[in-house]
Length: 478
Image (cartoon, rainbow, N blue to C red; front, side, top):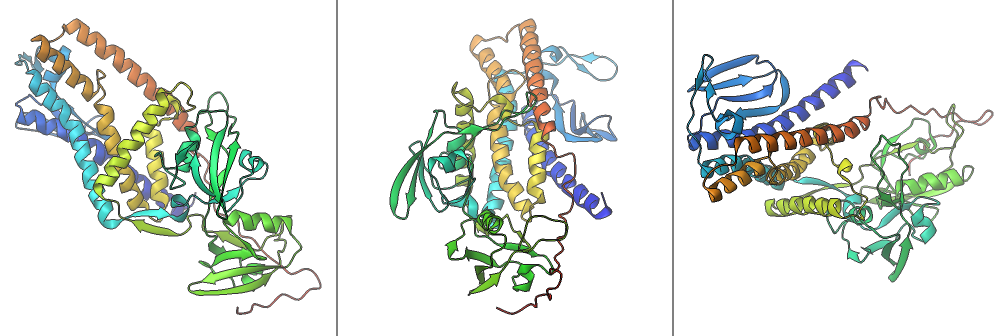
C-alpha cells in the first residue's frame, strides 16, 4: 500500500471511529446526566476503554480517557445489584443509600432517550444538507436481467416496470421498507415470487423461483435473489487513451442512451452487446449536457486482453440527486425498517436469521463503505439516524443487562414494594450477559469474514494499439 492510499484509509478510519464514538458517548451521557439529576452516586464517567491515559476527579466523579477508542461508560454502583452494599473510595467501602424504582427507571430510560435525541439532531442536519439518492435506488424499472437467471427464465426483461412483489406494491428498488423491490424479494417466503410488471402499457405477471447463493458452513447463509438490477443511465466515468471511445471523442460524464437503436437501461447491457458483437461497428447515441448526437464505434482488443472493448469505465454511482426528507419521515422510516427486520426474524418461514444482523465490526465496516463514497458524510449522517433509532429501541428490550431490563426490574420492584432477591438478580444478569456476549461473538465471527482483507488495488490501465498495417484512427469531433 502506497502512502496516498494509506493516508486515505487512515482518514476514513478516523471519521468512522469519531462518529461511532460520538453516538456511544452521547448514549452514556444520558445515563450520566440523569443520575446526577436524581442524586445517584456516579463513580466514574469514562470516554474510551483500557488503562486511562488521563483521569481527574471532579465533584466526586472520576473522569477518564482511555486508549481504546470504543465508546464510553458510566459507573453507577446503585444500579448494579451486587454493588448496592457500598462504594469503594480506595480505602474502604462506603455504604450507599438504596435508589427508588422511579429513579432507576429514569436513569435507565435516559440512555435510549439521548440516542433518540441524537437521531433527531442528525435527521435535522440531513433535512438541511440533503441525503444523496441514486437514480437506481428510486426507480422500479428493471435495468438488467442476468442471462439464465431465475428472472430471465421466468420472462422478466430490461425495461419492465415492477408494480408489485407478491402482491405488495413497490415504489423504489432499494431499501428495507415494504415499498422496496429488494426487501420484498429477500423477505418472501413462498416457493415462487409473484412479480407484476408494466411492459409497454400492458400488465404482466411472472412467477419467479428464487435462488440463494451457496455459501460455506462458516459464512452467512445466502438470501433470496432473482438476479435483476435497477435501471440506471449508463454514464461514462473514464475513457482510456487511444481506445475506440477516445477516438470517437466520448468524454467522462457522457451518457450513452442507445446502441444501434436499442435503448440502454443499464451500463451492463452495452457490455453484453459489445461482447456479443466483437467485430461489429456500432452506433451509439450520446447525451452530453443538453446536446444529443450519434457516434460510430468499433470494439478493439486492448493489449494483453482477449475480449474486445470500447475502452470506457462506468460511473456505477449513476445520477445522484439530493433528497430532503423531514426528520419525522426519517424517524418513521427507521422504526419501520427495524420492525420489518424483527418481523422477518420471528417468521419461521423467513430466510432472514439472527446471523444476518451485524455487530460493531460489521456496522463500522458499513460506515467505512459510506465514507468511501464522494457523498460520505451525508450518507453517514443519514444512516446514523437509523442506527440511533435502532440503538434506542433495542436498548429498551426488557432484557437484563440492557436498559430495558433495568426498567423492567424497576417496575417489578415498584409493584412488589421491594426488589427481587440479590441472588436472583445476579443470576439473571450473569445468564443474559453470557448470552449477549455469546451472540456478539457469533455475529462478529461472520462480520470478520466479510472484511476485504486484500486491497482492491488500482484498476489496470487498458492500452489500445491499431492492428499491424493499419493507420492509427484519428480523433474527430461529433
